[in-house]
Length: 234
Image (cartoon, rainbow, N blue to C red; front, side, top):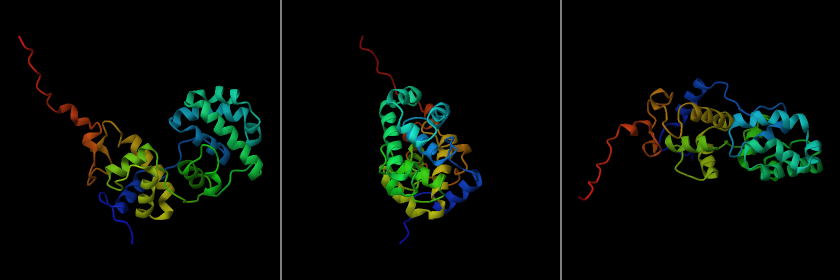
């Protein structure tokens, strides 16, 4: 039996998103699946904009899995330092590149199971690569924006990304999964922000339940009266 949403009707969410962001796509700059994989690994705890500033130099120095696998960790770290957590990310990149060379002929695999065996690649990263480059809807990308919006729209009551993804996959048709993730991310960046969401301008404003918004830094909180001050004892 198809899962029912506790908040905003899923079919309306999808329709409005398609009207608002008809060309929603991954914001990470890339020219091939290897570049997309690397950029997505670097995007953990980092903005796409910052990743896009770093990857041109990285890909100019290491354009393919063999060159990245043969690189020194020190050189990789120095290039990707601005993305944060660069020590761990450098290890993920080098080890993943090595596995691509040894097990997959230097190519990025098109299977979810093979991708998630790579260091630093969980379902979110695999979904980005499979959906964006290969056009395979294996799941919904759940990042911090999608997690926030799923709760506010009443699409999921879960907190764990994996469970949120499961709820979204049950609510929306498979052919929309990749688009849905990209479009919700755009909506989260532009309107449904973590702090001071732009609810009056949001394309989903008409019947969005705004679940939890009042407790997450809603803009109109500044209009609430200040609590009474305690008088000092004489």
